[in-house]
Length: 396
Image (cartoon, rainbow, N blue to C red):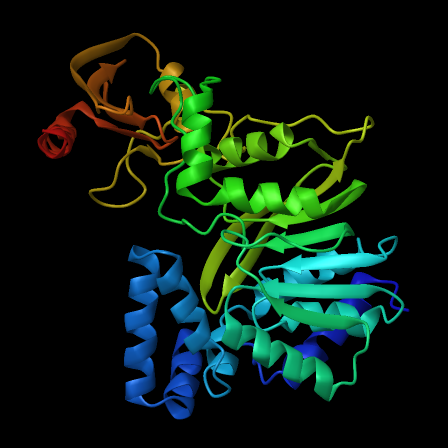
């Protein structure tokens, strides 16, 4: 039995190598390897189906993952997710100890499901996915290892119910597929707080497919079971309605959520949070709907330099959530121009040009938690005027 995270990680790396996955830290090296392994026609098909997946419906998504399951394609494609598999695999393994019957929802080709089953032969695992080609690959790999505690099923929970009962359900990157969905807007551009409008919450759950997926998983979960969840919901506008969907179904935090960071080759990814949830528990951690701290706290106007660090650069620039706190702390603020655009769905975008103690500033804020504050010397205020006008033109 593996005890430490380092031991689990080492074993997982061996497992990923068995799948033919490789770890890359350079885009140049990865894409050179990709071109060696895949033909130009393969790459065109992948690009086409990836674009269809982003723009289309569930059928386009299934078609993409059916293609991705081809033996010559999946080692190349999923090598981009190498560090994702490491982070999620290590964290999930640490929480499998007390479970007996485990459901891995959206298991794909079974990379991590098979890893868990290999580590815990005394537990029963079921992996489900709506890509039939992925399920075939997963079952073939499990059979090759002689795993008797694992089976895979092709199930689309949007059209089919789940069978069986589980004391642990694992769902990672499978509940909220609509990455382009901005989420739930705040009450105004001035705040990060969300109201309690049930119709807005329901709309988010339905258009992202979260409602039906989560409802069916909860029915398959034992009355005192646990759920491990990690989705692309790092942004507050997506995190808040996602957490509310979990809480509304009786799922409570068993521990403080962990933020996930990894790379897809060279690109830094801030993912998660990683949730450990318990059904029907009284001893729980409180849900947090506050903005994430971005490391740029503690703004002091007196500390703004008198000259830019780079030629033609600003004296101060902040594109993080803390830009709002910095804007609020500007002393003797005088607004010279401002405009607030409001869409038919209630979303807002505010842009403001002004001055503060001899300095010129531009501030932007919207109801999807984007903030920006730029400060320059008054002598260079014309650059902010031009920037202001660009934003106003785009709002028109």
